[in-house]
Length: 217
Image 1: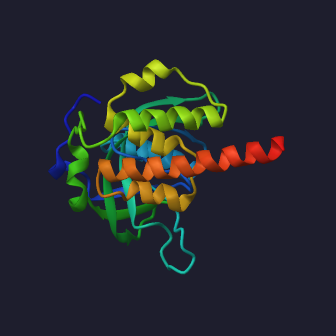
Image 2: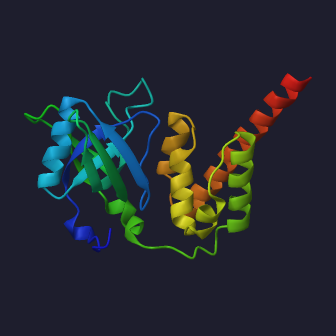
């Protein structure tokens, strides 16, 4: 996305796409397969008016009356392809997190909400290089996580990726719980998100290794 995003021009009212165990983070890419009619309509409407949609998780706590969590992330459609069957393959680029202010009544079948980005202005800044993040430790944890889960990737792509984008992409791709994903999304800054990501990954690695050892015994 080459055009600079101006904070004051971010949309106050956005369509909402709720996804369980899925978060979008700033500057990261989220591919989506759109097939439900109401969300096909949502994408069509978004393309006509700025290409923005909000990704948010359904409410994690059953005690709350809200349909969704209070914090999500605005995404901008960077590419879309229509399949022969009318479904869409969409790529979203994360722009800025938001707080839900109000659920709006609408004649649309999908949700629309009034949001505020005020607490997350820093999401629009490019923070690399991030000297306060231990990049070597982060790379080691990612390597261990991939190895213990028998996953392969082009390591040169990982090592060439900016630290902020690497943290956000790995946080999005890792199969953590809804609550853990939300904690990563709501981290106060990229350094805090890195700490949470490393801690969750190390717990997952230890658990996986224990299962392997128990199986071998």
